[in-house]
Amino acid sequence: MSDRVSIEIDGIGHGDTPIPMACRVANVIFSSGIPGRNPADGRRPDDPEQEVEFAFGNVAAVIRRAGADVDDVAEMTVLVSDESIRPLVDPYWVRMFPDSASRPARHTTVQQLRGGARIQLRFVAVVGRGNEPGS
Image (cartoon, rainbow, N blue to C red; front, side, top):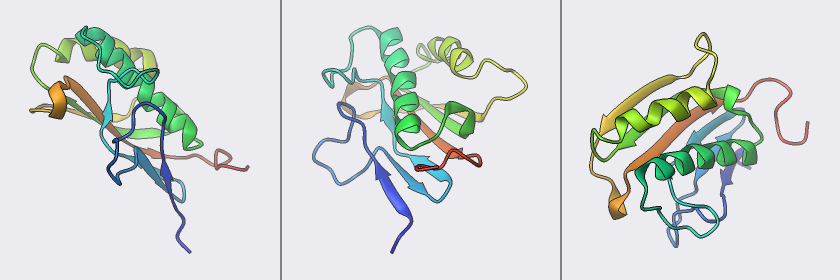
């Protein structure tokens, strides 16, 4: 039997594809690309800053669903559709990870994203002792 568990969040999944939002294996969580869609209706907002805000909120929701906390994030990849989105990311990054002495590694890159998306986030988290589901 596998220790692997798929993690899903209503409103932000990959639609009809067989791809989960994240996967937890033992105490490590690996995400798929997490979009900046509104989880209430699954839509991408017109406002780029709101899309960034939803993306970070969706990451937090996935992490919680996986039985972890944002403090468990070890690495995050930020994909943006163009350079104009990059300056919108840092305020949400600092809000999620306020301690400058304890932030995850981060890589930001510009690339074309599907469906007109302007941001997509991916992360790896290592769950600390006592945060495992059921503990």
